[in-house]
Image (cartoon, rainbow, N blue to C red):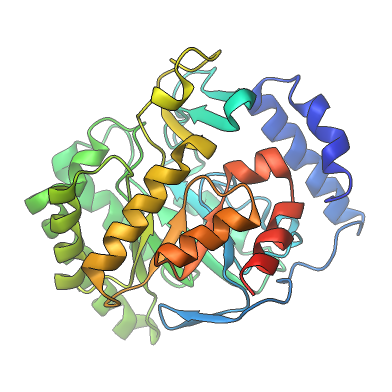
Length: 338
């Protein structure tokens, strides 16, 4: 697949973004069934311990690419050290109307307003039950679009209870810009209340299942210094196991005037790299090693991955870079982090 992607990309980029996404997965699934991909296991790299888990290499897949865990074995064949699937919600939902995914090749960027389109947590678990991959699997959870924000904790708790036995870690997504008011959960008392509820449930579930599944929290890049101060304090006080920095940005200065540059949604890819790295660096200073940082945002080369680690991250995740660079990016990043 790594060798073929440079040939396929020009053809895929002539299609609508979501159509190309679906076609790519169909081709990948066929390759898996025909035995044309390598075994679903990690490429050798620098092993890392994080959240009490042993990662064979520090390069992972970010949530959003495989929302329903329907293509895990194919993605695992790229050599990732870990995979994160989702975001998944308690009930299935279609997401926002199409078109909702836009490529901006001039900026190596993507804008999406998918809106947590997924088949629901039960559907994700049904897919996960049939995979051959035995590496580290994170499951990213969110709330349904029609759940009132004041009842958001109910959705996160429902998902946590369902995925707990299958997940190696669980990510709490409170930073997507495409679900109304979701980012308000990053603020002060709302964040404290949500994470306390999830921590209490994590403790109860650990006793019930006889294993402890770490909790990570995914935050936005569009945060000021006082917001970062508050978030860091809450992460530590509630005993979270990791923070993922960052999700997509609402800023448009880097793509102003480009085709699709003014589309609503979250911007990812190269334009978010510096903003994301600044958040990683700011969190590293505030957290001072008390919990690990998983960096995501604008990794399109091995050097970009190295930059995140140098800024204070323990692990990195890629998504948009995979669209622009293909599977070869995974090996390049692993090599850069050895």
